[in-house]
Structure formats: structure tokens, C-alpha cells
Image 1 (cartoon, helix red, strand yellow):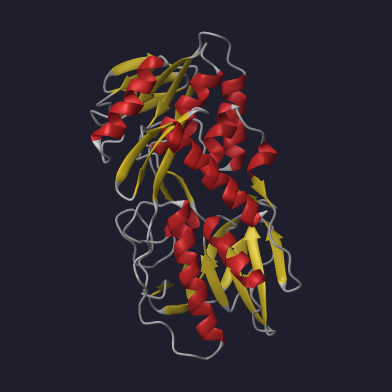
Image 2 (cartoon, one colour; image 1 turned 180 degrees about the horizontal axis):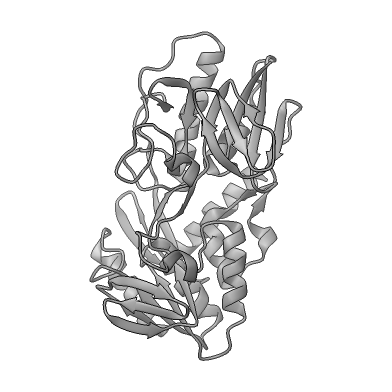
Length: 355
């Protein structure tokens, strides 16, 4: 029996699992999913877990069940492409016939001294729990720094100030305005919301060093009781270690069928794949749909698709606390309650269809 191994139960891996369970797959194929935890997580909501506004169980989704889908839990520390083996910490090597790499990403600290050691993160559920504990244990009037004014930093800062208005929150961004890549309407709306809710925006920041409870913006030192890092991501270490061609962000370059050149049995999905777009849940799911189509053709002995249409992204949605939000849908900016309702609806639909 052939073994299809899926590394990572994130948005891409979960979509492929659901496609396999919704449709029959060949009787000589078994599937093994490897993940650190026994459930799928709604990573887009980790900011709310860290801020303390939702509980842990609300962002868990059970993996689908099937007689020929097996689950193995552990931490992948190496992928041996020539020998078709996965090395998992404290376990025997796992052999595959076909492989889908969907291990996701981790923080990119840009070689800034002390950033990894002295900041908190929301890149995994474990790290988000630790961040919640650190933030929740702060007394009134304490200082919180959030490094990075992208979507994650904005959502964390807004959720935290809404639940803990007694904290002093600074949001650091290297650009003159947050959301600088988006229409000015969105940037102005979010900045006005932060001003109204007493979140201090530190623009044109240049974080040069981090120490215990101390942040350096250029040469100026700033005391902080908790520092949270949301200033960039990169593929996880086992993917960065692979001796294959990557882009400048260390994401793996792929064929039109989403396989690694020279390794037709190895697919890459999600944050580890070089796709020409910023990583997102909907991008990983769109790519997973195409990978599933390749697998179906391959298992049937039919010619593989020579190309796929470009993955269509519906837009981006972000929250500002529980009642307001912002987004870009069909290239049109939206703000306020409607944006927040849309995001809540998308989240509900995802949980409904996957739960």
C-alpha cells in the first residue's frame, strides 16, 4: 500500500484531508498526517487567543476521520528527500511514497539581537498561550510593545486595548503609515481607530536590539513589560534546510503542478511555497484544491494538468476589536461594522464546513 504523507494540519493540509474524505480515493493509498497537535487550529484567530478575548477550544477544529487516514503527532525536524523519509523527534523515521509539505511558518526576527529571546509570539497555539499568560498577568498601567504594524499586529493591538484599556500599548511599524501597501482609506481608518482608543503608533521605527524588558528603536531605549513580535514570517527550519531552489523569502520554488523540481512526488502547500502572493489561509486552500486535482490524475494514471489558472483571492479582512474592522474586497476598501461582520461570517462558515 502506498503512503501519502501530509506534513502539517494547517489550512492547506486540512483542505486536502477534507477533499480525500469527501471523495473516495484508491484502495491502495493510505494517508498519514503529521502534526504537533491533535487538531486543526484557526491560526487567523491566534491574536484573539493571545489577547484573552476568546478561549482555546473556540479555535480548534477536529481532523476528519477515515479508515485509511492515520495521524501521527510529533515535531518534524528534517525531511530526507533522496531517501523519502521524514525524521520526527523521538520517533522512528517515517517513509513516504508521496509527500505534501505544509509545515507553515515561524517568526522572522531579521537577525535583530535579542528579538527571539526576549519577545513573545502568536505564530503557534503554544506560543499564543504563552503570550496570553504574559499579557493577562500584567497589572494596570503596564507597558506593552507590539512590533510590526501588519494585519497580525493591528488585530492584536486592537483586541488587547478593547479588553484591557488599562494597559499602555505601543504599536511599532517601520513605515510612515500602517497598512502602507493598501489604499489610504484603510490606513486612515485604522490609525483613527487607534488614536480614539489610545494605542500609540510609532511610525518609521527601526528596531535594532531587544533586551529583557527593553526595546531599542534606533539608539533610543524604551522600557516594556511585554514585547510581542509580529514583524514578519519565514518557512520553518526543516523547510529552510532543504537543498532545493528557494525565493528570497526562503519559500520553495515549484513546478506548475506544485511539486519540487526533480521530485515529482513531493508537493509544497501554503506558507512554505513560493506563489507570488503574501501567505494566507485562502491562498493555501486554493493551492490545496489544485494539488488534490494533481493527485487524482496521478492515481488514475492520467496525464497531469500542464498548468492551472491563477488562484483567485477574494480579498483581505481584519478586525478592530469585536465591533469594527477593515478590508479589501474585489479591490474595494471596506471599513466599520460591515467589515467586522463579514470577517465573523467567513470564520463561522469555515468552522461550520470543517466541524
